[in-house]
Image (tube, rainbow, N blue to C red):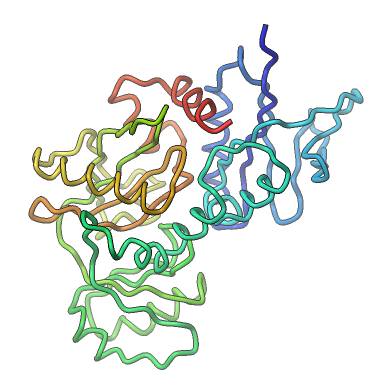
Length: 326
C-alpha cells in the first residue's frame, strides 16, 4: 500500500485576504482524499508558521519543513498546498522557499508567480501575444508628478485605477470624473508603489479556470460575473453581492477566442497547475484583466463552481492538482 503524502495546507498570509485564505484552506482540508493524504493546516503570518495541535501552537521547523507534535512524533511534509491569496503565497516568495527545500508545491513557479502578481509586468509580458487583447494603460510610480489631464486624454473616462501588486479586490477604483483620479491613485499607493491606470472596457466580465493535465489543457467553463456594484470589488467577490452564472452567456465565437487567449497566456508566462484568468468580453473579443495563481477555493468560489459544472468533484480536482505537481 502506498504511504500517505504528508500535505501542508498553507493559509493566512500577510495581505488583507487573510480571512479569505482561511476559508479556502478549511474547504480544501475538508475535501482532500483522506485515503491518499494526511493534511495539516499551517497558518502563516510573517515569520510565524504555526500548526494547531489540539490547542497547542506548534512552530514549523523551516530547516526541514516539519513539525513535532505533542506526542513527540515528527511530521516531515513532502508536499505544500498553497492557499494563501496575496503575499507571500501568490507572489513567488513561498515558492522560492519550496524550490530551495526541494518540496513540491501546488502553484506556479517563483518567476511566474512574481510576474502574474504584478498587473503591470503581466501585461508587458503578454504584449506580443497574438490572441491576447488588452486595455490601454498608463503606469504611475510613487513620487511621480501626476498629470491627470494627460491621463484622461489618453484613456478617457470612466477608467480604472489599480495597485500594481495587490490582490484583485484591494487598491482598485473605478473613476468617473477627473476630480476622483488623483485621490484614487494616492489610495492605491497605500497598497503598492506602482499604480496601473486602465481605460474602461464595457462588456461582460468573465473568470475562467485552466490547468494542464498530462500534457493536455483542461479548460473550465467560464463564469459570468454580474456584480451589484459598478465592478467585481471586495463586497461583490466575498460578501455575495454578485450574480455568478456558469457557464457564461457568451457566443460560441467569444468562447473560442477566450480559450485561445487563455492557452496563449498559459504558454507565454510558463504557468503550471490550476490558475484562474479574468477577462472582459466586448464584441466577442476577450480583453485580459489579470491572472490569479492561487484562486479562491471556498465552497462558493468560482473554481469549485466551474469544476462542478463540468462534472468534477472537489476531491477529484485536488487529486488532479497534486498528481500534476508532486
